[in-house]
Image 1: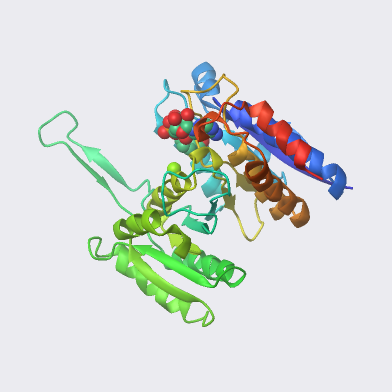
Image 2: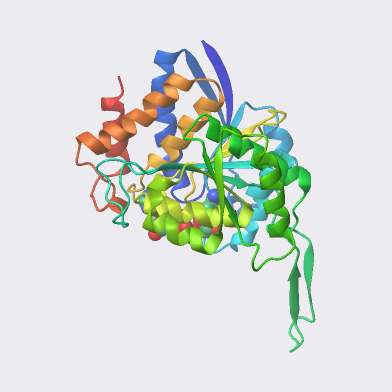
Length: 351
Ligand code: NAI
Ligand code: MG
């Protein structure tokens, strides 16, 4: 029996509902696959911020630095500005732990209605998003607040090392998939950073002669993801473009509640963090109706990272089977199933 220590941060809203759901699945599957997860639970959240004025304690990162992985539900509260929850918790974890790859797989499952007519079960792609630099930068400032001359400046930061490692990750990932990479750019309008991005992509692509690749402007690319999502395999994108692209793609797949994500430190110098794409969903929080698939699938990604590939495959297969073989759907997919009913269906279908 292998034991993995998981830092569990349920967070706010439906984060509190989908993380126990996912842990129930991971623990059940573990009994058959020879691993055990032990959880240290942290109350880091907007709720904590409202009580004590900080999302996490000052030494928070040191408390989780030696865990094998971090599993996070969602953070966000209508009474707390979103930049507080992001810059007070998620971004420090991503940056201090050098989680420079944000991996967001998207699949359309048989039996799940997509709002997009062209989306079929052939849709199976991954967004590889740069996670620690780019447009999400602290460089810049505001001047002349409150005057007619008020202004704000924010600099995007693209480094050769940062672009190189994310592009290499995407091309390597494509080797084990359908050998195709699409790079998101906007070098027609953003004339310094994006041509630099394009140059590095072209240079690195030269080292992967087996991979076909294209680059597309992000605006046109969004249209193509809606019109013909099945043609894509691996996307590589900057922090901002990858964020937008993956939410769009999650909606194409039926619901943002289905989409998983991993923040990876590929060198394993630090723990990686696993969190569904969705937020705390205050509009449905506390009702027990959240779709648990995003969190459960995120859990499967964590298992894959910890070396339990078969267990991860089994969970992903079970998700597909519940959609293919039952009519059980949560409210975001037009059904009436509760989170608990969906989790029970997954547990029933798991071998
Ligand atoms: P959201 O993802 O929380 O909700 C958007 C819509 O999708 C809502 O109508 C919600 O009910 C629905 N939805 C999301 N996940 C669902 C699920 N699992 N099952 C069923 N329906 C689901 O995004 P929103 O409303 O923009 O943000 C709410 C809060 O969450 C904000 O404070 C925001 O900052 C935070 N947030 C946190 C994230 C994180 O922790 N990584 C990511 C995105 C937003
Ligand atoms: Mg987003």
